[in-house]
Amino acid sequence: MATASAAFKSREDHRKQLELEEARKAGLAPAELDEDGKEINPHIPQYMSSAPWYLNAERPSLKHQRKWKSDPNYTKDWYDRGAKVFQAEKFRPGACTNCGALSHDIKTCMERPRKVGAKWTNKRIAADEKVESFELDYDGKRDRWNGYDPATYARVIDSYEMRDEARRKYQKEQQMKKMEQKNAIPAREKENGNGSDEDEDEDDDVEVDEAKVDESKQMDFAKVEKRVRTTGGGSTGTVRNLRIREDTAKYLLNLDVNSAYYDPKTRSMREDPLPETDPNEKFYAGDNQNRVSGQAQEFKHLNIHAWEAFEKGQDIHLQAAPSQAELLHREFKIKKEKLKSQTKEDILNKYGNAADEEKPDMELLLGQTERQVEYDRAGRIIKGQEKAVPKSKYEEDVYINNHTTVWGSWWKDGQWGYKCCRQHTRNSYCTGQAGIDAAEASADLMRTNIEKKEALSEKPAAREETNPAIWGTEVPDDLVLDQKKLKAALKKEDERLREEKDERKRKYNVTHSDEVTAEDMEAYRMKKVHFDDPMKDFLV
Image (cartoon, rainbow, N blue to C red):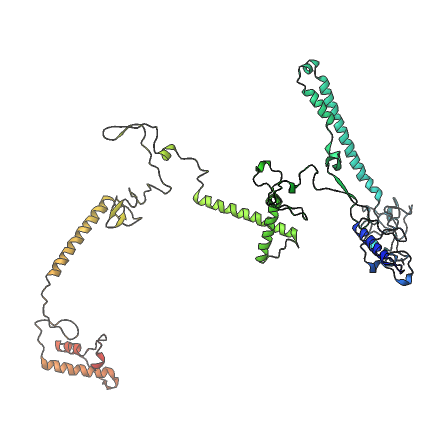
């Protein structure tokens, strides 16, 4: 760090000054002191540590960076908690009507509300509290330890000392109990013993509370002097070496030039230097072994989950918010396990679990048994039990609607049915033997009708010639029409049709005869318009 002095320095002095600054920054040289004897951080830049020329600073100092003009109104005092000022004997006007103190009113009174206040009883007047007001500076308002009494920490120290004292007392009592038990053993048993009591005595003498042993005594690592205590130099004293000196260095495990590569800068050897050695006897198997074991795999899965979640649109970043990423990964694993277990349960509920179910009988597995069954000449069982036919998971021998057989026990003409009634309609009601007889009779009748129809189709009947009328029914054979009367009837029918088209031509006193002759009927049939006739429009 450059000083405030503007004196001329030679090249050698300037070089020494730079080396001194580098040593101070590295923590190998003590820091520079200012006018007040305080250490100056060597990492402070020169434009901050150098004082202006008009201050005429002879020594390096940071006084020009501090607030040298302090406000006299600010104070570092704190409230005197619980202090009392004056104890009155009678109630005073303006005091609290509840307790009688003059330092507050009844709204801010912290004493339990009395049944009758001190204003009326004039008894048990409370003392006035000490009311103070401080004007704190910027740091005083934000000081979280402002007003803390360090003497109160003695309670914490006393509690730890009491715990240690209780532990020592307990250990002493345990040792006294062991000594009493050993003294109670007869001398005869000690002589016949195999020396185990002597070993236990030695173990009790050597037994020490490991919690009180210093860590430096447990770790017998070498110590290397590295730095001195400085303001910017970091830690002091010693730094533990990373390897025990008795262990063989990893680059000396295999001296072959073509073996695993050792990087001296990072002190890493990724590959296994002795790949052909028994894994159980290996002490070191390469740095890559650490990447596939322990928490390295968990961190790898966490990183992959963060990448995949970010690609799918979630706002997650492992380096920016590691706690959020780990929490989301934990929730993801819980949901994945739940989904996996749910899928497994669904499959087991649907198809069952053959591994957990009870094993079937040996009869089903091997198809044989030691049971003896005797039969007579007719095939009837005399002794034993007939072999049970295994059933499937489907319902069997379930008879519905009065049937005595199941559906599918009857087959005819490419159709399934019931054998008991020979019906092909499923879920129909059983008719029994009567239904079979009725079905056979119906089939016989159908067969007879078909034969008759075939016989008729082979010999067509002679067609009788008839003389049908123009429109309508057939004309009888014995009917004889008079042609004159027929012409008159046709003329009469034409007039009637004209009257129907134009009602103005109908006369007022029109008379009709109810008698209809054969000629009138024939004329009507001949003049009648059939609406289904495609040529009806050409007949008019």
